[in-house]
Amino acid sequence: MSIMVAAVFHIARKVTGMTLDKDLGNGLKNAFYSVLFYASWCPFSQATRPTFDALSTMFPPIRHLAVESSSAAPRYGVHRFPSILIMNGTTRVIYHGSKDLNSLVLLYKRVTGLEPAADVSVDQYMEFGNKGSIWTWNTSPREILTREPYLAFSFLFLFFRAFLYISPWILPMLRTVWFTYVWHADQGIFSEWSHLPWQALQINDAKRLWSKLRLSSKARNIQKGANNARAWASSLTSVSLGEPSSSRTLVGS
Image (cartoon, rainbow, N blue to C red; front, side, top):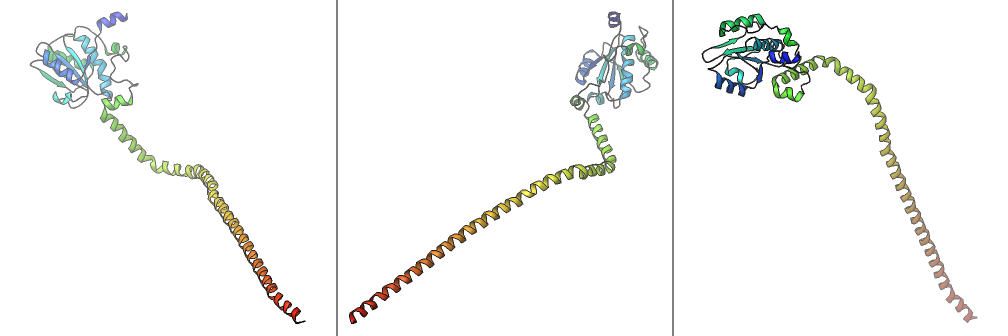
């Protein structure tokens, strides 16, 4: 059953802006082209893609191309998404109207003069799952930023707007939590560290006091030694002076 579906159903070929220019330039005179300009972030583009794929099966002579938002869109007169461009060598129609299947079938008949070759519904294309999906939710942020920079900046702008809106309530709560838990814990750590310089100063003061005591003790010892030397010298002098007088007394007798 899946082989029959793959053989019968067609999906519009996804191309870049450069490939689109090349395809339209080479084969424009020989066939009709139907080009869907879409944006992956646009919900209307997501709804239009299965319908556009159904048209590729209903009108196989028309070459269906899907171009994601790029710089090529303004060159073809497209300035909003989703838009459908039908053109050949002599005709160019940009369609911005209703994107339901019946409206687009009438558009194809009127512009190309072709009749649908098959009768399909959009629901049948929804059964393909995400094979022809424009947007995949597992897209990485880097890929989104590369493919849709304006969308990324829009999300960033909305984030900052939301933050500014809730900041009058969030900031006081954060401040309360900070002073309740973090600040007290930091104060305990800081108080323990603050004792270290005081203890270091006390140790230095004790060392200075001990040095002073040692110096004063040495000074006292030196002073005491000097006094002893002075007393010893004075006693020695008195003894020396007293000996001649004694000898003179003996001679006189």
